[in-house]
Image 1 (cartoon, rainbow, N blue to C red):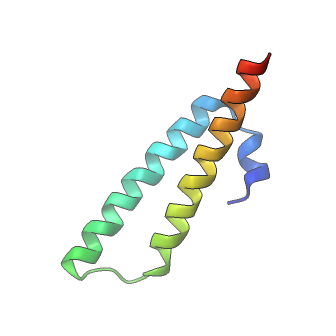
Image 2: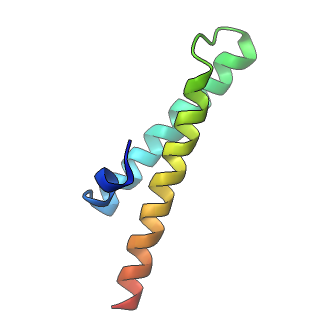
Length: 67
């Protein structure tokens, strides 16, 4: 997921996506703990995607506050 794609979305869409990523992160941690994880690299990508979404949300909030 690219940050440019995220900047086109509304804050509500970003919050929904962040919630989805957090749920996926929880499920991946659960799979890791039980030994059922197949794709270990997915943890890293989900974590980074969540950070990107948070960054874009903060940018949008700062822009709204500056206006």
